[in-house]
Image (spheres, rainbow, N blue to C red):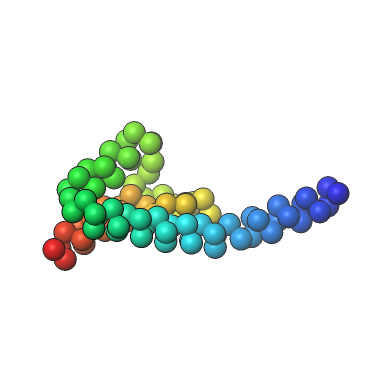
Length: 89
């Protein structure tokens, strides 16, 4: 039984970057829908900036950490998305 658990954990660890990539994609899409709904990119940018201090999150995490552990887009990417949305309008 311990060997089976070890195999399952190893498979989950191997799939972690792929599942986190999917999660980041959905989170980015949710951010875009929020921008489309609220139509206030300055508020979104302010929120993302505040997240870096209140959540103690790094605006740009090391690439390996984002790949393995990141389930949300980086804060700089989220701010960039708000600015891009504003530029399109």
